[in-house]
Image 1 (tube, protein in one colour):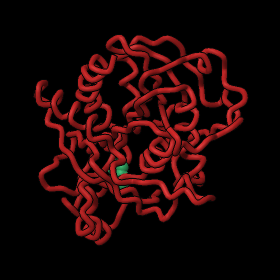
Image 2 (cartoon, protein in one colour):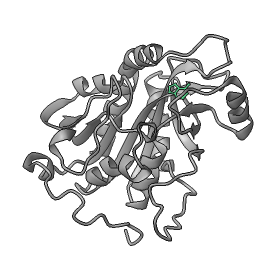
Image 3 (tube, protein in one colour):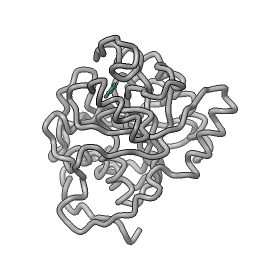
Length: 268
Ligand code: HPA
């Protein structure tokens, strides 16, 4: 891990249970997806507020706690809720959670988010595994130094093979595509959505990309999944609502829980 970017002393006061936990997998749960934690055996929980240096989210539906858990015989650290760039946090603050989790030594980071779909073949309610992203925020958690980090394969090809295979076996329709990260907080205009389609995006959201960049820079293998909660603006003519995003996320969470559970067993 010679390319790792160190984060010395950033979190000097991590509660003991968390500091001593050695997860194999770290998992960030996005909007409405916190219910995944119920599928796991819960060992302990630490609210973000108890960790000096970690920013707190003010978005409804984004709980803020780490949960140490076990699933399929594997130790897993869940981050229930994240902070966003649109809340006014810097990219480095957004990625702080990932640096903390990475310091506990997991091999794999799984990121989940809610996203609008702009691919006519990817209907809302389904899941898309990211195979690449477009960072349209014009910002990076690595800025501040000459961190010319290679980004040829952000989303680990071997993990994608694993998840694709398991989804096939379990009859889960798992799409694969490109996630465009926009700054938000407002949803897109129909013209912006047409632009995103021309740029090659399949889904659009406001998270994940800073975390993925940070995790790769720290040497973690990354997998990421978008819960396709709604058609992106202009696709159907219906206005978008945060409520709809949250509800679809909650009802789609079960399918991803099954997939992640199967994947954990393969990672042990
Ligand atoms: N656009 C941006 N972010 C989102 C969307 C969307 O349509 N749905 C959920 N998060």
